Length: 179
Ligand SMILES: *[C@@H]1O[C@H](CO)[C@@H](O)[C@H](O)[C@H]1NC(C)=O
Ligand SMILES: *[C@@H]1O[C@H](CO)[C@@H](O)[C@H](O)[C@H]1NC(C)=O
Ligand SMILES: *[C@@H]1O[C@H](CO)[C@@H](O)[C@H](O)[C@H]1NC(C)=O
Ligand SMILES: *[C@@H]1O[C@H](CO)[C@@H](O)[C@H](O)[C@H]1NC(C)=O
Ligand SMILES: *[C@@H]1O[C@H](CO)[C@@H](O)[C@H](O)[C@H]1NC(C)=O
Image (cartoon, rainbow, N blue to C red):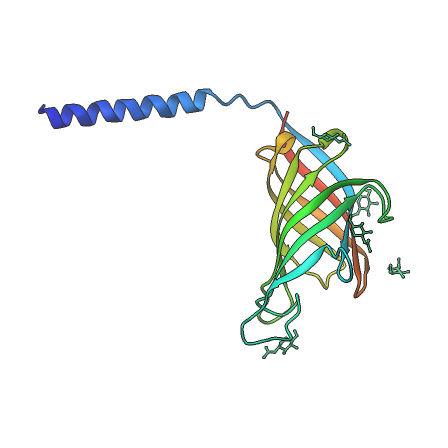
């Protein structure tokens, strides 16, 4: 073997050692399932609206957040009960993208961060289509932080009240994560 081959061999061994060390550092506990129940409260208009239209198609000055191509930023409240004034347990922060060319369809990308109770400091990440016109929906949970690190799961949504000014959605989330 010449020197170049020796060097290559050493490099490969070095990388393999790094990879195996990386694996050894993870100690996952047992998988477990957690069910979460809360309400998503959106204020669409007025002071302190929790959703703002941040991008609209260039050729349409009258576009709203449902117009195909519109992008909105969300900071919705998550409450324990149906009443918007019931205890705040977190925020859903992210984007709602109107991505249905043929029929109204929102795609939702949001971090549901909890700020109270058992899961304070943890979050679940949702990335899913969110068919606004359907009363009952299912969204995909694709990850999480803190106690929900490496989470996967799904959320069942029920639209409790949707008006031009507010959106109130009941969430039942089933999360698979590690102890
Ligand atoms: C908007 O938020 C500010 C700061 O939290 C608060 O002082 C004000 O009362 C709120 N306005 C409404 C209409 O809720
Ligand atoms: C602009 O957006 C409005 C509201 O969604 C819609 O009614 C209208 O058809 C759109 N216009 C064009 C040219 O896409
Ligand atoms: C949530 O955690 C933060 C940071 O640890 C802490 O400051 C806050 O008081 C906690 N909130 C509740 C309601 O426990
Ligand atoms: C959430 O679960 C409760 C209790 O099982 C049930 O009454 C409610 O209808 C469910 N809601 C949704 C949106 O799945
Ligand atoms: C929906 O919300 C509006 C505005 O807050 C309220 O006037 C109406 O009574 C609510 N409807 C239901 C079915 O809760």
